[in-house]
Image (tube, rainbow, N blue to C red; front, side, top):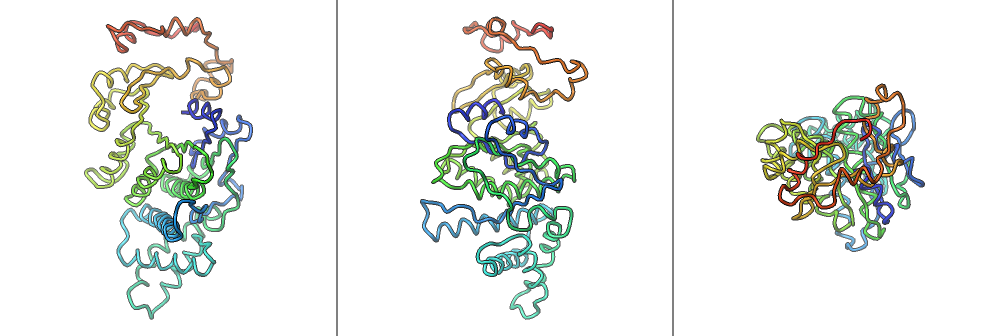
Length: 392
């Protein structure tokens, strides 16, 4: 994926990584002239406001634009609260949250923040003259938002943004690796906030930019019904904004962390992934075979082929076509070393030696331009095993 999107920069595309949980994309952004890294946590003082209005949609009426902004804000709040509580909001809680957001918008001249919503929820909870039981509905959401205002996520998302999105940068990476060490729930909440901020600022067709939005740990964007619905809506709008979404999963089983067995959430998560038209499948283990057949409806020969792929090779399903691709076939030495993701586990073995460069003649021998059509790709892989030798 790093190879694909980095080469696309030469064709005018912008690369956006809303949340980089392991810091893997930071090195890529720093290696590209003009690349921008937004670091969260670790004493940087950087804040992102997930309730930012974002740019004005050029093709929408005033009413349509206002509705879109309000819907994005309320969906972000609902996702954060439902994710923390592990259950859906009641009707009263939903009403209290919506009321608090409206109050915050009015009080701040349309510059609401999580802190502002938190404070308004406190006012609603103390209001004994309400016509309905909004006071009861404000308690649980306020406890959740307190984590952002006074808890372990304070100083990151509760106030107005301290940085702006660089529209001219070839690649923008939000480094959230510091926060992912705080636990799984903190990681999920962080990803929701950083992604919501990114979506708000790049939802601008007038920018005339085509973008790749790379979602590392893609399942974290789909951990509750509201976040799933936000994700689904975003996918539908992406073509309008000139955005290609890349959702990275280590295995199909990642989605089993979404909801309970047989739940609406898990079914929707698998449906969303299944509906994505272009799929890249790298080498999988034996346990993944059934998931690829049942969840992605891949042909049995292709599933078997995926078990024997070599490093850098993948099955690419682009529309109605399928390909076997070697993404290292044309890599330069600079690319190969920059995109290597296993240096931490091989450093001791190679004693910090430079990675070998495979010359064109060797590649031609390993990858003939016209494989035997009688045996097909699977037969060619079996007939041409790559030995694990120093030369290759």
